[in-house]
Length: 181
Image (tube, rainbow, N blue to C red; front, top):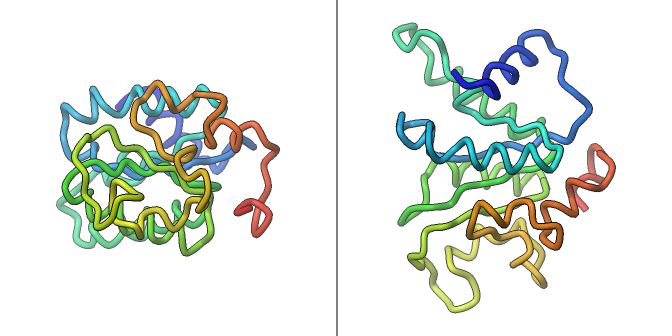
């Protein structure tokens, strides 16, 4: 387990979360050892560089024992709780179509009116129309005008000060309805 994952799990066990804004990192990379080792760390590092506490579900909620009955339900509930309790979501929407678990988590965050940020460095288009590169429903959590500021196509863009995530991260932390604005 990496240093980020260990610190997140330790904070969760002790209940001593920081006052930093939290961002749920919805992604399918935890299913692959190679993707978990190569693709997740740069994304986590970029989000942390913005001063965010990253809630990565594979690091936070995977059980120690996959043989214990009910592990699937417990993971689903823990991920659901983290989406609801986080301040925002950063969703990796690669794939054709994007990962169904990520899509469910993104839908929950949009329904909760969480600030939403999308990451796709996959160049394939998966869209009905010409406005968006993906299914239009994925963009319902983004502003109509300027949605491109909340859409990222390279890891290096994550910390760009002119993009929406950096601006959101720099604002003071708020809870409830104020945080969604």
